[in-house]
Length: 206
Image (cartoon, rainbow, N blue to C red):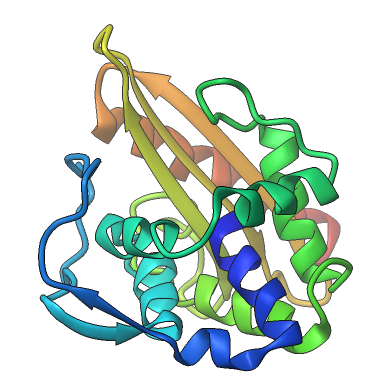
């Protein structure tokens, strides 16, 4: 999400940034194994930045992420978190509240302008990942969200899903981060917590 926001921030000054073409002819260095891979992996070819952003967000495609990171300075990406007062740890991890800040500023259009904030949320609402926040929610409820996974050297796995649930008349932000040995159990935990929160909202805002 910070990578997307960095590009959109640049595009506010020069929209041609999004039409720049990037060639994908070999797998970028640093590509990690995905436990929840996309059904539509990026095929080798030439893509615009805008197309890669869509793959990165909707399909959570790590190839698209690395291609985008390799074509922008780290300073531009880091500037997003610096501007928002978010401190990244040495291992580039973010806290629940810090990640929620990224979604909050998109919702209120307080960092990117309204057009790019809405564009970002629209992509997030098309996310393919359905094993987390959205799994047990009504199908007609829109959720703009992004998941992340990570496997640590000690065998611990992490699975996170953060998003804005567009509950009728009262949208809410929910960010759930989990860790443990089994990804399926982590996904189930996220599903159950998300469902319970939605049920409580339904009691308050019937």
